[in-house]
Length: 327
Image (cartoon, rainbow, N blue to C red; front, side, top):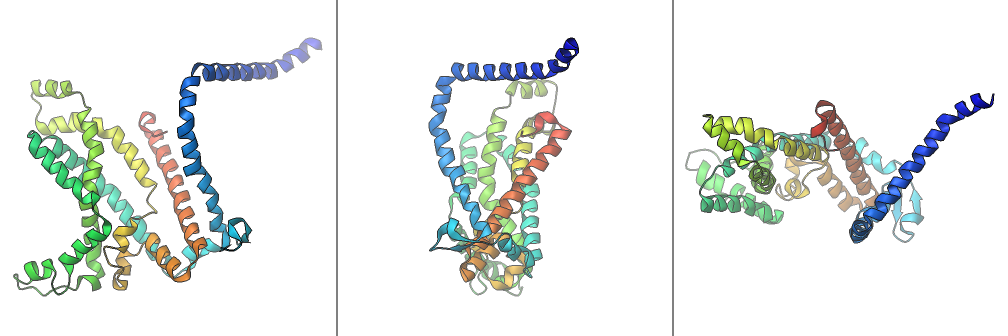
């Protein structure tokens, strides 16, 4: 009986020994890397103060905020603030617009940015390459308000460049751009890529610069054409960074560039069917109602859905190719 009891207790003892072994290994690693851990403390404190402590503010999404009582003293309303997004008449429209634009920007953007990066990397004249890259980067540093006025100068119904210098000489009738929502998906898409492509190319250009040049030299010796070099060497080398950026982009599917969708169309009501997104709708509602609880609920909803989408997309990539997953 004693032997049987000892044998029965042995698995538990083995688990205890394994725990002690792991704990001892952890302590040894702490002692071994104590200098690095001490160096990490300032950055860790900054992250906690700026990223984790403000997360207490998510309580606003579940409360009817009373400024006199503060966040913790305000009345708890549960999911009441979230109903605003889902019970409004325009909930379906703003959701479809937000997701559609985001998916369009992700899919089309991947093709445009990768193609542009490869094209820039093939420019052998260094001076010309710098000029092209600088010209593409400049729009990214423009204020969205400035961009909105540039677009207005092009699309002004009476004096805009498009109507006066393009349509009129061709004998075509002028278009009242700010009353016709059908044109704005194309306009907003063009403005988005004009502003963002240059900065997005920086990451891919850095990745291309890191590709071993000996592979290209070997391909040239074997008689590979430029297209074959791109298809067999450049694109496979860019695949990991493409997948990582794609996974991170999926997390922003329920978010939109507020400035692009609010400032560029000048918040024209006639354009809402094509330009209204979750962010712009919540902003206008907050301005008119002054309810920060509702806007906080929208932000929390977007963040949670984005996090879930990142985890799911990473899980799909992990199942297909474990080495290409983000985590």
